[in-house]
Length: 160
Image 1: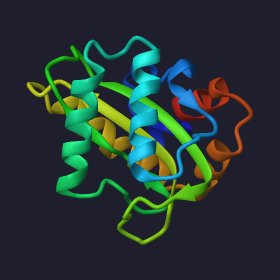
Image 2: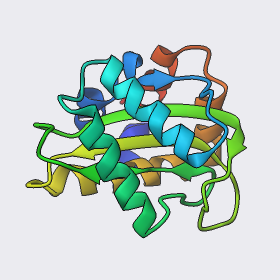
Image 3: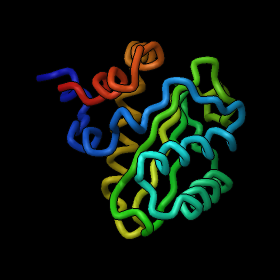
Image 4: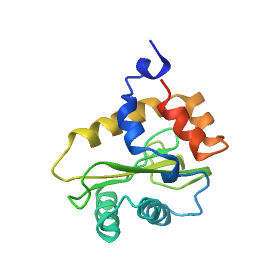
């Protein structure tokens, strides 16, 4: 059994959604709102969003309902809109952390934004559960945060 299989990560979902052009090693943002806008901009710059304003609206709306700051420095702001045909993902790293109203009170250092079709819940839920499980591993989080390139980050998360 490979490293990824032990964690139940379907590498094909990550391979499809997470590419070097949607990974930023050092977010410039210093607040939660800035981070969400910066992550939406990364998706837009990569050509992933037919309607970036709508993507921002649904992610910010979801965040107002309940913070997506999780444990272990992970935050996964997300939203659903049928303006995207499939799940799209961007990742930003902030080693010094951003206050994200996280469950454990710690700042977020690894931020993943997802925007997915409102009419499909399966890929979004599977991605969230699997990436959370993968990044629960402290060694994996450290490797991601100290990666030298976006390609290295992707390689760490999708390797078999």
